Image (cartoon, rainbow, N blue to C red):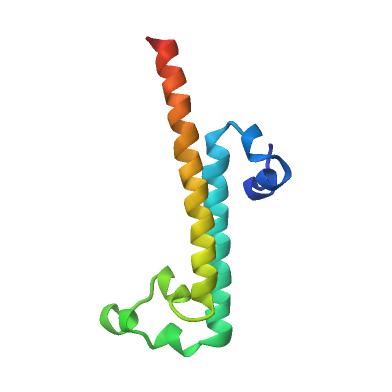
Length: 108
């Protein structure tokens, strides 16, 4: 795999041939970062006032990453990205569980 993006790696090869759980976890982080970046860009373009004028900023005095995907159309991108990320994390958990069971059988 090397230094290639995990998302691109998973795109090139069928899911059943990937046995390293960490590939799925890395892909989830890549999808999460892309989702946050795209959501913030859409918020900046379509709803720039919400960045400085929102309840979180009013109460705490600062924003967190969620402000970027709280409004339309950024929230649509957020839902799609997080759904993909949830699948990737569940696949990581499944494969990691299989790996731990195999290692446990070898160790005992």
